[in-house]
Picture 1 (tube, rainbow, N blue to C red):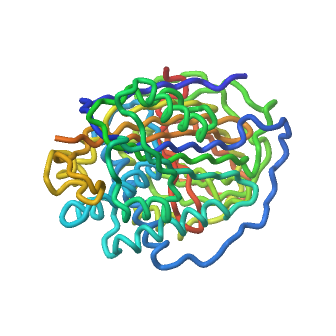
Picture 2: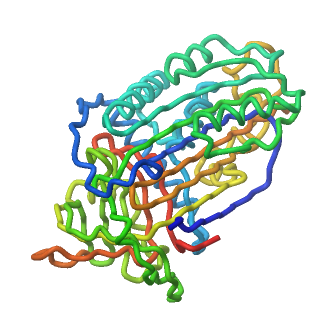
Picture 3: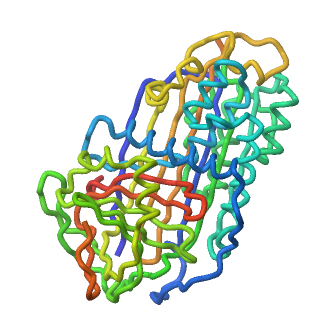
Length: 431
């Protein structure tokens, strides 16, 4: 039975110029095998994180929750899915093209206060290495690429930082050739296992650089949902309407970690060795606007620290969300990244060695996809930054816990706390 398809678009005004592209994909075992038995635990490759890695992980999480609050500020009842990790890393690469007050704006919005630029870059490199290696059963790859206008000269320090800390491939590109857009799109498709296609619509003649980040992640649920248990069941929307959805059913009790408050429940659904998990935040009313104020770094830290082991028979809907934000520029400006979005002589002064007209970010495009089924989760996301020139019940016996109303969800790594993807499911049948 095919998962439901969800397709959501959020658009803002598009400007033209230089692009920074970050593509991010998370693919967790949707297409592999028919074995419905638990995946079983494997030994994680854990190590002590450095002080700067912990600071960066906290910065990533705070940025993720801040961006989520910004994107949900209108209180609508549409589905949402995006990768804060992708947006954060794309902006972190862009940060290296600046100094002075503009650099400080990037540091503040990316929540990197108290870290020097070099410390932040090193933490990106080290935390990326940790995420790549922590779970031997999870396939994770992270790639970066930079294309720049072929008659421009990239400053050596910027190029060195991109190569050393972000392991970026760097090459010139002919922005006047309409076929050049295919070079970047094909790279994104390759790095995202062909899930993000034709993301970049065109290359304007005043574009001077593209920075691209791509992430691929594949794993299985720790406990798979037997396909024969999936049935049509009710899902109650925010407005009280009931619809029928494909509801997966674990069938037998399994161990989960959960935190119950008076008006909401936090639950972790683990993948593989349990280093990666899908965090769920749900309330009784199904009105997620009531949950948004609770979704902060401080509360998430508290939930993770005080959660307890519970035995549950979990039921959750199959779903698929495809989401595109045509421009994050207004949202990022509301979050405090203001000066880089207007032509200013201090913008991106560390990017090129040849003289240029003032530069600005004119577009930040983000596209993401997630599919959840019995075997696991498949998800993808991409970010393009364009810069221009000019409560849980008692558990004496295993309880059935059903995600049959809207909920917030996010994919996270336990040891570091890093959040790769996040979103909200309002309607599993939304199209």
